[in-house]
Amino acid sequence: MNCGELLIIGGAEDKCLEGEVLNKFVELAIRAKGGIGILPTASEIPEEVSKEYIRIFRDLGVSKVEVIKLNSRKDAEEQAICEQLASFSAIFITGGNQSRLSELIGQSKFHNTLSKAWHNGMVLAGTSAGASIMGKQMIVAADTMLNDDKLKVEIGKGFGFLDGLLIDQHFSQRGRFDRLLSAIAENKEIIGIGIDENTAILVKDGQFEVFGQHQVLVLDGSKSDYINITSSENGSEELTLSGFQLHTLTRGYRFDLHTRKLLMKKGIQS
Amino acid sequence: MNCGELLIIGGAEDKCLEGEVLNKFVELAIRAKGGIGILPTASEIPEEVSKEYIRIFRDLGVSKVEVIKLNSRKDAEEQAICEQLASFSAIFITGGNQSRLSELIGQSKFHNTLSKAWHNGMVLAGTSAGASIMGKQMIVAADTMLNDDKLKVEIGKGFGFLDGLLIDQHFSQRGRFDRLLSAIAENKEIIGIGIDENTAILVKDGQFEVFGQHQVLVLDGSKSDYINITSSENGSEELTLSGFQLHTLTRGYRFDLHTRKLLMKKGIQS
Image (cartoon, rainbow over all chains, first blue to last red; front, side):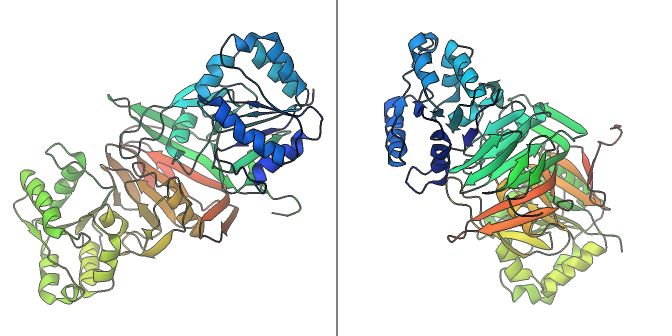
């Protein structure tokens, strides 16, 4: 098996001809001939969301761009939809609500087909909710409550393409550091990855490389020797923890997911 | 010289009889007989701000509570005001704008008198702007721009009572992680301390202990082997950095500022 690349986007990526993130996706997608399938199931307005991506992928020179219409748990078991899925060389999962993706697709025939196709080299991209769903676990609720009490973070099941990683998106733009820290405090073996808007990581062979405009934050609690989580009556949560490792990366820098260390840009020595 | 305790408060501390943070301050203040001086210079509405503190300190049993009326650079050179300052056993610096404190008081006779008094055991507390001013450096501008570009953090001069620490306040409540990280990326030998609202650290003898409701975050870049800061045309700033250490503490936990390690609560083994 030779898994395809995963392009995990922090949301709000530029949808113009110069947009680095979608250009990268198209570059990967067109190495094979199947074309791009857009999966807008996370969104409550799938047609509107799809329209934008159809336009930009066509503008970027992809001839076959189709929308996968999957709006129910029943659709996710449909042989015809699974066959359509398997015909593409790359899938783009849009934003919306990640819980819709897990509720409608999780553990279905469609999920299974997607997983197999990826194991056989299909390129998968996801933005926003479509980014969160890529992990085995994902954050499903409890945004950072600015000027309010902090709430307990809720963790749900993702599609499981990224083992040992937890993705959060719109990261700096929505001030989500606290919720990622909470999530990793409760699962310290998992690496937390916070991806900013118009920014992406490309995961392949146990490494990732950063593309796009802003920053990616990596939170690693595996070396921590003390974690204590206190919940108060109102459900708010306070953390005591020691020795978490923090890294941030911008365009071109890479990260080794096994050694959990920053790698320099290609061609540059540390 | 035997410096007094420093109680550094993240803003919005409870001003009721049960409020842990102000109770702690009063407990320290009344060990000596001078009473409490309130310094509201950071605020544009010093009388209103002072009124609340006069009430709560009296309610907590302090008989001598006075306001230091210092509203100009000239006042900060006044012998009479410096003598009033020296008569107290504890000073409480209110919130407002930390730049007002440095502009009106920095390097003045008043600053000098305050510094001497602290070196001789006077207890100093500061909340919000009054917390930021305690360090040698402080963040003076550039709040985290949620849903907007990140701006460059501006660093100014504080009163210098906390060498090697940079304080930020209203920390989780205002989503200020990014701005603290930027500041420490530019000054990696300084420890960044983010204090939540209604939460405080009590600094004494190279350690601090946490009091109050929420969390204190410690950011330590001293072991980082790579930091690269990129500024874009619009002044926004992106960071690449490796191996920052992160700790968070809640009530009762302590932190050793020399070893830069979390210490357990008193009487509890790790």
